Image (tube, rainbow, N blue to C red):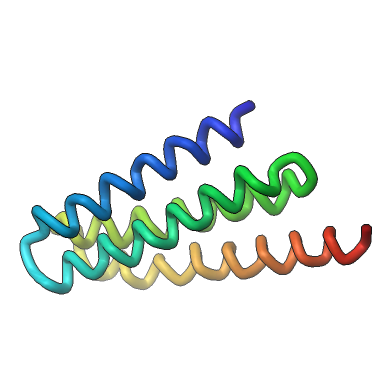
Length: 109
């Protein structure tokens, strides 16, 4: 199942980002971006795995949102232009919509 595979890869990326943030980041701001991205990515990878059987659409939206959110933070931590920070909230918005959608689906049962 593609959702599960993507969620597992996402969780692995989160662990790698957290480790790099703790041991290899070039400065405190970069370490914080890696830490924040890693926490959000790991949390949402696990959430997507947990809900993908019942709430497939929201699980996909959580993974898409966390990919945008975390990857933009990782990119900035690795030296990409800081204007990418303007893209990060798009991922956060998708996360919020995914959670609201999941809540609505669970409310209906």
